[in-house]
Amino acid sequence: MVKLGGVIKKARLKKGFTLDEVALKCGYSKALISRIENDNVFPSIESLSKISAALDFPLYDIFASLPIEEPVVLHKQDRNRFHVNEGEFDLEFLVPNPQNVSLLPVMYSGEPNAHSTERMGKHIGQEWSFVMRGKVEVSIGEKKYLLKEGDAIYFNASAPHKYVNVGTESAYGICITIPPSY
Image (cartoon, rainbow, N blue to C red; front, side, top):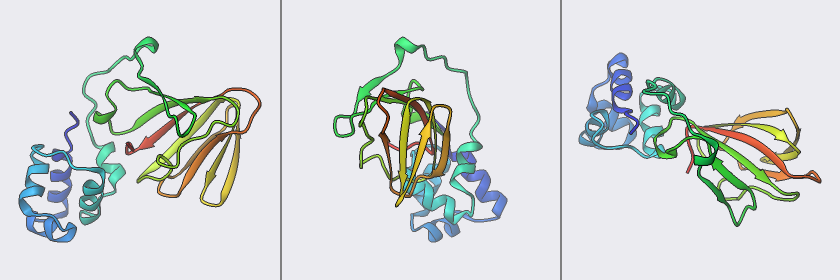
């Protein structure tokens, strides 16, 4: 389990805020903030976002401050692969337990015209994507970007976005969201 509490507490103390001040700023109880700081409660991304705003400490910095415990090797045959029916892309988590990471790397693949889902197309944080093979059109808001093999894109993931394989062959790529979106 990722332990965010120490990072949050350290940021709070560095800013000179009391538990009461943070609770008041983000609209949560002092008890909840204390339980989060002591790793007794794991906050949702929404809660974490409110707390980071109250601390004037970017959400990215909270995740970037987490210590990496032990290296984890995930062999190809052990990856969790699934098909997103409404989106037509196949996805593979590139980490063994996606709920316990500060960034979420995912490999995506799809036949021509495959696309990502609307459900996954807007979330907090940033997103980076790299096309390993094929042609993928990435729509962000009203703008469209054509990515070919070897191209990458980085953007604010809170904007509505969608991936479409616009090529005539299968497309493969890697996408990383920070913080993870579920």
